[in-house]
Image 1 (cartoon, rainbow, N blue to C red):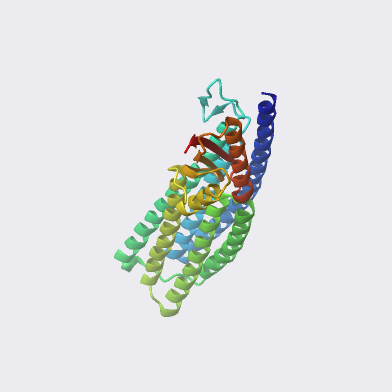
Image 2: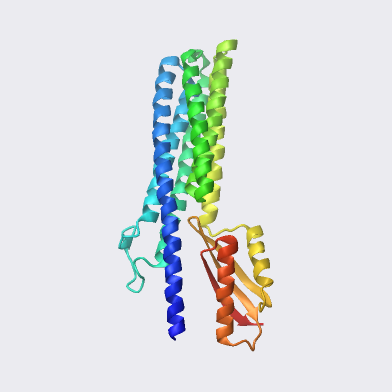
Length: 324
């Protein structure tokens, strides 16, 4: 009994270390996202102003795209704030069960889901802005008599946006890989798409100026909308799959192979991996010798959990042993 109590205390200490490490990653991600907000705000103001005085639909579409970046970053910041709020005594205003510790593992894993929820909302916002850009671009093509060739000054806005967004993409990509953070990874995808659309905007405006084609500006704005739509659908798809408890079958197959080759495991009857924000947990049912003692099957489960944590970074593996 004493050994069991000691083991539970050790597990609790291990979880506290994992939680603290994850919360520190989220804190670092917040700093990067605030940098994103500042960069997107600067670009949006410059592009909107130059689009108005330079009469460019494409630059306006790119400004709306960068406005979506501001909204996306703020939504991700809200999700991370909720995930980090370990001192809250409820969950989004809902009281907790009396038998659920306020800072327990189950509660914190639930909080980590909110980062994914707000990442998904980011995808929805991007899709909505893409539809608006489509509408504006098609409308301008249907009323070509009112279209004007963009002014040369609009090239400056597109060029500034492209340079800043390439730098933001590099920063987000580097931090996302280092911190293994889904929010920053989504932000990196968004900023890369924004850099490409700014490049497309630059080329489209230059083409309209060079060839004196007023309709090219409207066509280019629709192309920019397509880029926004693709990025939004990709972010929405990945985050919604995580929330729907989908996990990569190939990665689950790797987990299964490692466990089935473990001494004492006859086969793996069931295996389910889950995303909790950026944290992966695992539930498995293994078949063992029917004559194995309870303490031996318990020890086997602990060894498997330790191996999965070392090899794959899985923070929690629940093992259930059944007789083969």
